Amino acid sequence: MERITSPELAQAFIDEQIAAVRNQVGDKKVLLALSGGVDSSVVAALLIKAIGDQLVCVHVNHGLLRKGEPEQVVRVFKEELGANLIYVDAVDRFLSKLAGVADPETKRKIIGKEFIDVFAEEASKLEGIKFLGQGTIYPDILESKDGIKAHHNVGGLPEGLDFELVEPIKLLYKDEVRVVGKALGLPDNMVYRQPFPGPGLGVRCTGAITRDRLEAVREADAIFREEIDKMDPTPWQYFVAIPDVKSTGIKDGKRYMGWAAVIRAVQTKDAVTAKSVEIPWATLCTIRDRIIAEVPGINRVLWDFSDKPVATIEWE
Ligand code: XMP
Image 1: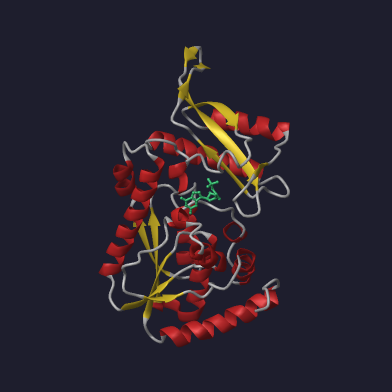
Image 2 (image 1 turned 45 degrees about the horizontal axis):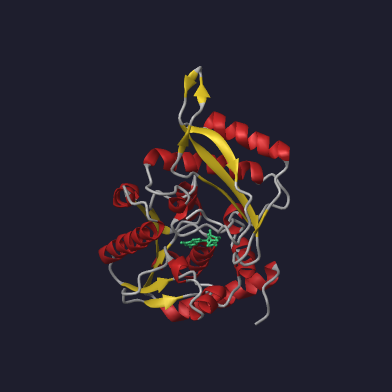
């Protein structure tokens, strides 16, 4: 297959897939878990074009998404593209299951299982669903064949559900998915966004997640990304983590125990190894000043400029 590198090739691919999906699905309904990530967003936009409201999208807000993401999913898909979208506010449910749980792999398992449960519950409320849409892409197929990415499938989908799969982008590489997403009219910040782990901010609020520290991660991360987005080119992945540690500070003449926001920006090809990206001093100072001034509970900003290996990209 010719690599999709231009709007024309993307359009030809879209036309071809619209016909293939219509042929596969007929007049039946398709269910799709729409996280707002590049792959599921592109599949949603493509399926809306192909089968309109025979597509039912479910967006599960587990409380671990980045600032503004759930709102953007609703705005783009429901309001702009007219999708048949079910928005599930599962924030309390996830956070209560995670309360007091400090072990990273247990946190991942809880998030993964809870996601499947919520999705399956929504699916069971619907009638006439025959198909499940999935944003599988070619590297997913290659990596699961080699057993590389088992733990990265958190946020992936229920296996036990008895649906036939609709996977229109399964032969595409990520760069091709982006070209197709652009041709479908999705906004740049959806099409070109950086990778984001399935367990979301949960692995960046290390140890046992608390609502106040989670909010601090979300706010500090939004500020950091806003400032790093001004760099050209932007790094491959950049985010904030807040370890579960407090240190002494001083504010308004009083002791102010606070968390440290850890900033991290890396460059990599495949996430197997990664190099820290140089951030100019002036940018660092702006980031430090903004995070400390704007995010309650933070009294220090630390720069994690460790390479992988030995440090992994995420903190958990
Ligand atoms: P690490 O931390 O292993 O991360 O160096 C490599 C890449 O994988 C992402 N990552 C995850 N993605 N579920 C995901 O979907 C996960 O549990 C997970 N853990 C790490 C990470 O953001 C980086 O891009």
